[in-house]
Image 1 (spheres, rainbow, N blue to C red):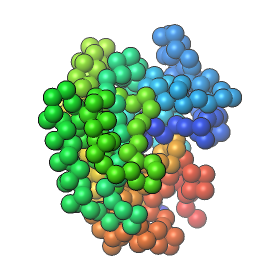
Image 2: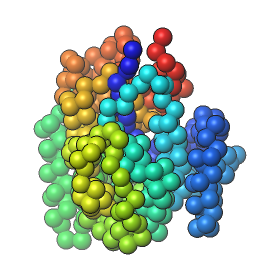
Image 3: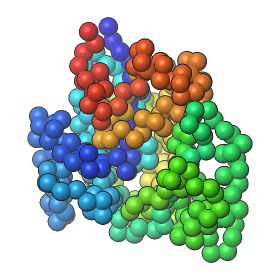
Image 4: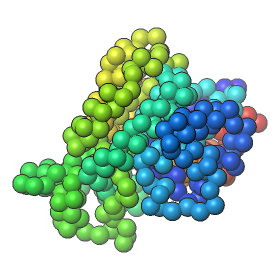
Length: 347
């Protein structure tokens, strides 16, 4: 019996110390795939992906860089997408932030190699320019119930700070129960000073992250359009849900518009991951939501996005966990205890 799944690809920040060696542990059978990625990096004088993954030491300063993290995450996620059990039918693909580029390849709109070129180019450009920064701040409590008033208050504060002279601040990603904000240092610092600390963690600055999904990235988007050729796109094999919740269908996708979105709106405007997940749930009603590796940090945002729309009666964290215990709905391939659910046929 076929299991239907929405496939979700992660963005930056998901390849950390526990993920070192991910390609070697899980994908020793994909040497040919990785050889193409390594050759592309070597041609640019960059360290090969398999060498980065096979290193004996991990440092945040190195592995959080856009030109290092992006290709590692792409290789890990795409290899996972190619490792699903044969009884799983992917009915739609989406992703978070950089995960949109991975989603394009996972859905067949880009070849594996062209997808790698897109990710490596944009990751390198982001690192070279490193305009602005990002921080994360929650608007829901421990029960995951949506607090729309708190969210509105925080977004009003963001707008107020952005209106100050010499300050830039905007919503970067709507991420389940979290707001990812981006701006210049003055804008980020003003927000940090204005909100209470939560759990000694938030607001949390993200290392080596630029002001993604804001107008600050306009120069990066322009340079990406110069260096990359939109002719690499083809019709997706399965539907794609983008960072606005718009659906790109196989056979009827306007490829020029898809390219414009990918290196235009997607780079310089807010990315609504919550809406992408919710639209995928509503339109495709899958048996499973499968988050590719590396890492497991995106699973919480997916679960919160579903809870915030009362998906299948799940109105809070407890309800979600009860459903997961009864029959897993959300599978994180980066979690060894869950990975086999997606890679082995259902019994």
